[in-house]
Length: 432
Image (cartoon, rainbow, N blue to C red):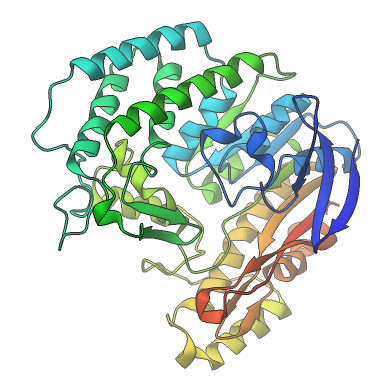
């Protein structure tokens, strides 16, 4: 079913996808997976390919009944598990991403959704133009005039988004409402004055003279709904339709999972960047966030992988000579670091990952496995070998490291030259 082949430094898996055709995608990224079902609902540059779940299930001895992903993201693991006939459990702290995952994996009445789409469009057409579109609690740069002439949405575009948001909120079916909400969210960034990269937002080149029509919202939402309903109908007969979605901090909720056979996931990488920022436009536009306090609370529920807000970076009980050496090197180069908390962040991140791995190990059956894709970092030209560190601490958590293999090379930050030289690795652990 699978064929491994080396190509340009990346591990590739040939995999018969759900449409019956063969597709090639790297294990460490979802490159090439855009043609697969459900992948076009929102682009996830950082997601791994669904082939990895098939590889993990094939290589793990015994029957796979329960599959876990403590960092749900785009829902790749949960969705692939359903297609493979394996019951998935997913944890996701970001409320927008949690809704996106559930919209993909929960049963939905497609015919009812199609009728509801007509109602939503009709409400939007009959809505009265609001003087100022309201995004409760959002930053002042959210809507024109913004601050110092900089803003994310032109007012007429913002009005159309609010009209759709309010029309969707009137739908009585929670599954349909959730589906439409995440599909509208996917139209927000394309209709805005910004672009989102792997490390945050920036204004589009020439955005001041690029004024999109509110009609682009109509087109994006319509096309998104049609595409989603097509996927949901075509792939409704999956081998497994059961699932469990736990919303919240993975460090707290990992203890609530049932006994499992396999875990496949990719956690946030310790690159000092808060991934919550990538989704802030969707979070504020759709009302997932309505105050600065909620934004801060959400950030604090993520792994300590960033220093964009102040957090307690203390930790204890982690035994790793590689971690200790790396932190000492970073401390020695503290004057070159852009933030003095970076050395402690690396230790805190490792401690947080230890909580996740220990929680999984306690519920993992004998010979059950963990497959995780992790990325190394670099600060002041000092390498932070996260994959090696996590493999090193795993025996103390009841897990045996089987292999650490590079998946692909990530680009270093512009300050480090931007070259594709940071390793992204697949770490495979087994329960003793």
